[in-house]
Length: 274
View 1 (cartoon, rainbow, N blue to C red):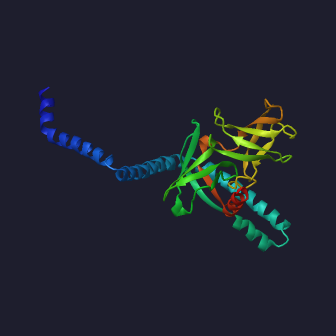
View 2: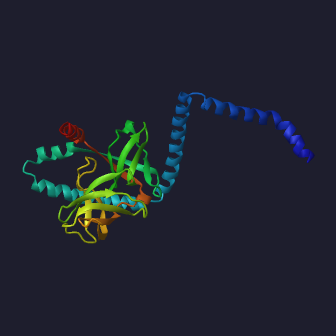
View 3: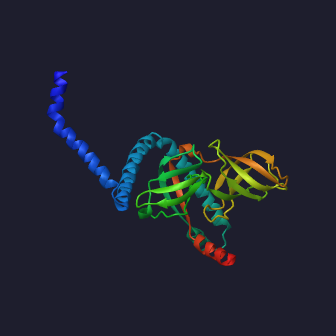
């Protein structure tokens, strides 16, 4: 007991100094909106780097699998390019038009959620890397993930398909029927496909892709496969369940896609509405 008292007496000045410093920093942090904003920016940067460190360690052990998947994807793209070249009458002009339509960037997911009503992912690329809001996020093998909603200099945040505020148009790859893809909660691997015409030729296992109406995802982006088909209460449409192609809980490498024509299309649509 005497040793404890002696230790407290010996270090009391240092302990009081630390306590006073903590109180002073806290008072300064909440003194003005500017200081609050600066502290928030600093803390986000620190948290982002911590997430990045942990993500880097976990991703290191997944490199072998990812390299195999990327190699397979490269081979698939090479075959796809050769098929396109065989079909294009003017290869140079047509290929350049396709390339100008979309810009592609790569990134790595360093944080994500799947158990909330509104789920997001954090990506280790920001506006200094060319990332901007409204860019689509996809897996390397072409599966839809989400859309970028905000970015800082070095990081970006995207809402995923598992977000109540996310609503995109989907199309059945078989007969071309359209519906709305929305998140109603529940299983993180399943999403709803609603407003599909009752005359649509739909069955379990059918592939659903992005329709391209939202100007985010390329039309060929895969959303998933039909897992369950049920007639809606109104009797005029189907409400289906889609098993997502992208595993939202195991996202590592992602591709960010910018539609270079989306601004022009949106402006024309707004003008037509007026």
